[in-house]
Amino acid sequence: MQKDFALSRKLQALREKTVLGNSPRYGRSRFVAIFLGVDGGGTKTTCVVGNEDSLLATATAGGSNVVRLGEEQARKSLHEAIHRACEAARIELSAVQRISVGMAGAGRPQIGDVVRRMVAEIFPGNVLIAGDMVIALEAAFGEGPGIVAISGTGSIAYGRNSMGGTARAGGWGFAISDEGSAHWIGRSAVVAVMKAHDEGSGSSLFKVISQAWDVTTLGDLVRAANATPAPNFAELFAPILAAAEAGDLSARTVLTQAGAELAGLAKTVISRIFEETPDVRVAMSGGVFRNSALVRQVFYNSLRSEYPSAAVASTMVEPVKGALEIARRGHVRG
Image (cartoon, rainbow, N blue to C red; front, side, top):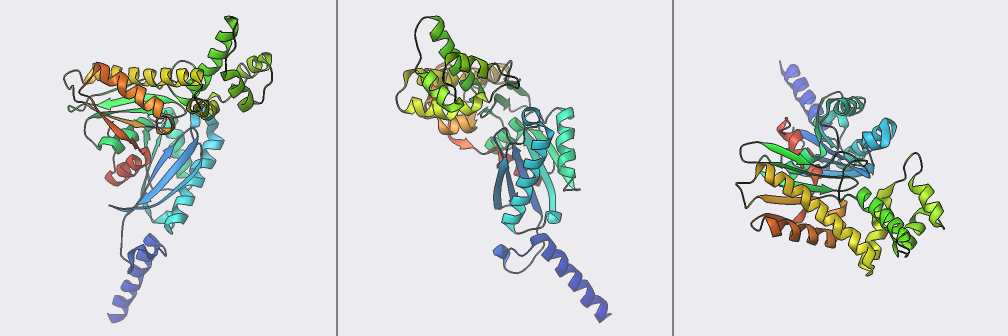
């Protein structure tokens, strides 16, 4: 009997060590549920590791948006981000109880199934899949009401009211939507250059774009912009932002338009499901909002001009924390 008891204690200790790895965070070993949250963006993939109430580690990898980057790149980045996060937290992936992944388009079964299959290649356990706007809304407001406007490589506004009703605006892809996104900003800058040329004048944005894309003539720019596959317009955001901050009026005009477009998306969601809630809470997320004070200010001013009681948060939402909360909870709420 004593031998059986001793063996049982050893097995339990081994199990606890497997769950927590060799992490010094907890002192004495004890059983703790471990969860992973993943935000798969077009530019980068972020993975966080946490237990029931603490964040243990964060890691990043390249972009993993399946629609824009393809399955091979998405798989590589997802796997790298997950493995790096586990290494940073000093745990084995086998110790994880549940993983939640948020990604643009993942709310559609055909994309969500692909993402789930990719994660299942390295993790056979429970995997929850949600759209990127769902994890951002979760990070901003939990399961409560509010709107989150996202502007990164792409863009979307998404909200949920107190009755559980949801609505979205934008986010339909580069060719027909994604207003105010980094892609939209880059493309709009190219459009502004060509429009200035048609009007018989030049644009200071040509120098900005030509340096970023390594083109020397207007003809080169036209060929690059119309190439197949299409160029990465989003990579123009950083130099346009730098030009705007240096006082370039054309660059500032493009960013001002972006802020107004993003406010328009949020207004559409408000008009659909928050008309009776003038003090609706609004949050911002994504690299464009995070890096451009001008976009944030225009967004705020435009939104408040029509909805003066809207409570627009000044801090940026980190969607990956919403993915972690969903993993902890064990189900996705739309």
